[in-house]
Amino acid sequence: MDRERGSAVAEFAMVSGLVVVLVVALVQVVLGLHVRNTLIDSAAEGARHAALAGAGHAAGVERTRELISAGLSSSYADHVSATTVQVSGATLVRVDVSAPLPVIGLLGPSGVLEVSGHAIQEDGP
Image (cartoon, rainbow, N blue to C red; front, side, top):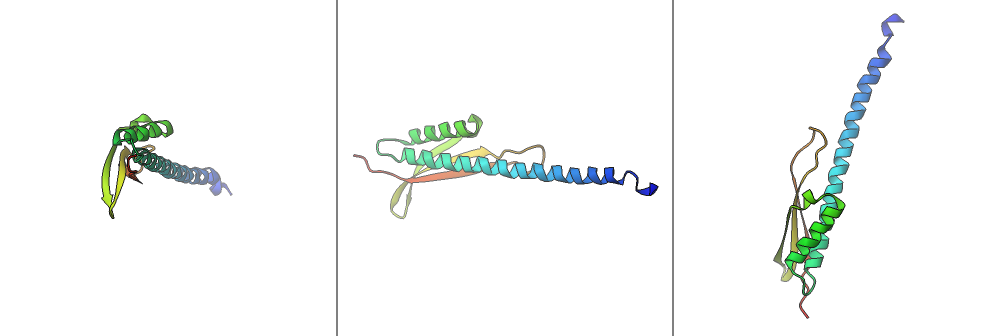
């Protein structure tokens, strides 16, 4: 009986350490997905705005930056660009966003998220 004294404390410490690592990893994945989805939605909305008749690429870039700043932080809206591309005979506006991947602590990959949004260019009036 005396040999097992204190084993519950040691087991609790080991299991709780593992649970903390798993929770931090889960929060990291959820945060990364949230940032990625927000950037994709902002780029798509910016492309739709730039594709409107009478609007330009600068308007789409500005709209994308506004949405990213409102949803995340203005530091994620530093690298936004808009271009016109041809796909299967259709003229599209493409808005590209490049932002840092948020990392909690020292664990996990540090990198850059690159997303884009597309919209069909409307003809002028």
